[in-house]
Image (cartoon, rainbow, N blue to C red; front, top):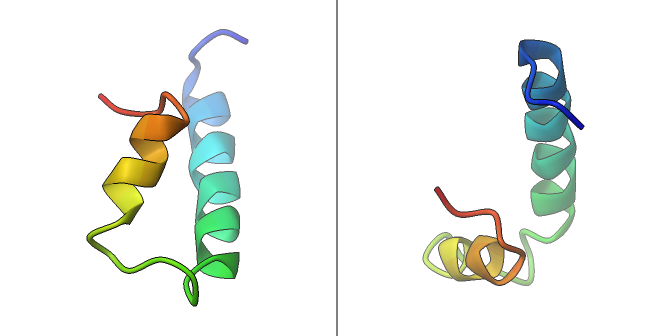
Length: 42
């Protein structure tokens, strides 16, 4: 999928949904590690 503004917005929204569903399982300090394990670091 090409990186377009609309694709990045959709990705951001979906990640927000996923992370909000997991908020009882992860603290804010753990989220960067989770994203790194998914290959989503920058």
